[in-house]
Amino acid sequence: MKTGKVGLALRYGVASALALLFLLPLYVIVRNAFSTNANITAARWNWLPDQANLTNLHSLLANDSIGIVRAMGNSAVMSLLQTAGTVTVSLLAGYALARYTHRVARVLLGLTVFTLMVPAATTFLPMFIITAQLGWIDTFRGLVIPGMFSAFATYLFRQFFLDFPVELEDASLIDGCNPWTSFWRIVVPNSTGIIAAVGTIVLIGSWNAFLWPTLIGRDATRTVQVALSQFMTSQGVRYPELFMGTLVAVLPMLFVFLFLQRYLVQGLTTSGLR
Image (tube, rainbow, N blue to C red; front, side, top):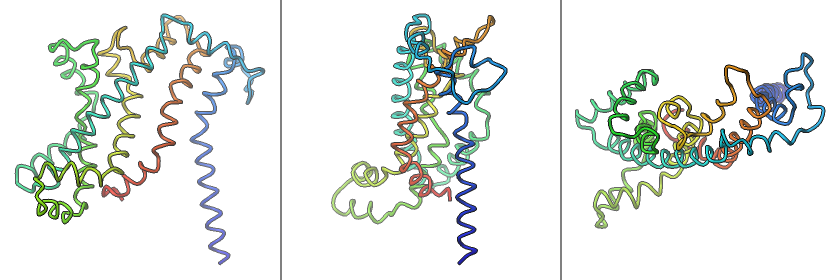
């Protein structure tokens, strides 16, 4: 009994230490967001700023050349559209790969998994050429559509549907539903956990995307991550505005994660990745 309590205390201790370690970058962002440039660059580290500098937020919002509010709106539109598109495409593809065991389906599954081994950066050049030829530079189509096809999300859905009870679908077919109706009225409503999990992963990844929006986006479709990079120039780094902008950009995804974290854990534990 005593050994069990010691083991439990040890686990809680390790978990608390890791939690503090992972929260350290967030603390640095909050601390520097309300600090002056002198506090941030001082040789001596202070755990708290000398005084809360609220002018950083005003300077960030008043900077028309950065346009942080418009950039966050662009990121929100891009993230929501890409999340909806990726979840829809991956849901259909994952279901097909799980239900149809024909040799062609197995080949497609192998090719899908193979694409996970290809570094994403190597695909940017051909994707950029295709996007430019379609005339999608500086458009939401160019930002959203190339990222809608996710092999990882497809594989997660496929693993989930392998364990999904086929008897529910058979019962709906006996009741007169066709396969398409059975999928949307029986399968999808009973897959909200994995849909929310994949949606959360895609949403956070889309919001934090930097390289592809940098290549495709211009002034009209500049996202928040690209806008933040404007604070780092060859003349120097504007630390107060950069950290305040980072804090503003982090808050929406923090609330999303806190609200959907239980679906994220539930979806991953029921998708075959145990």
